[in-house]
Length: 191
Image (cartoon, rainbow, N blue to C red; front, side):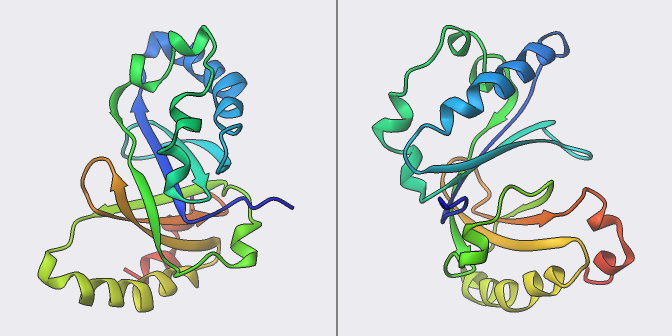
C-alpha cells in the first residue's frame, strides 16, 4: 500500500467570493485535487471548511517531504483551462499557503504512514521567542501534544515547522474523528 503521510505538509487557506464559491468547489473537487495528486511525492489530500475562525477553505496536502512541492513536478505540471481561471491564487482572498516540515513525532510510524485524511482538523499556529525554543519544543512534544492525544476522538497530534510561507514558524495539527472533539470536557480538561 502506498504511503499516505510523510514528513511534509502543504496547507492552502483562502476565502472565496460568495458568487464564485460553487464553481470554486466544483473545480477543486472535480479537477484540482486529482491534478495535484499526480505530482511525485504528493501522497494524499483533503479539503476542509472552518467551523470557527477562518479563512473558510483549507486544502491539506500530505507530502513525502517538503521537497515534493519545491521541484519542477509541482510548478511545471500541466494545468487545464479551468485551472488557468480558477483557484485560490486567482480568486481567493485571505490566501496563504505555508509549507511545513514535521518536527514531532520524530519520524512517520507505519500506522501513521498508512492512515488516510482525518475527517476534521484543529490547527494551532504560533511563534516562540528564540531563547525559549528548546524548552518550549521539549514541553510541547513530551507533555502538551501527548496529553491531547488521550482525548477520545483525537486520532493524533503532529507538529510542524514552516519551511516556506508566512509566520508563525510553528504549527500543531490535531486530527479528529469529528469536529466536536475540541468541544468535549475531556479536551477542555487538557487546557
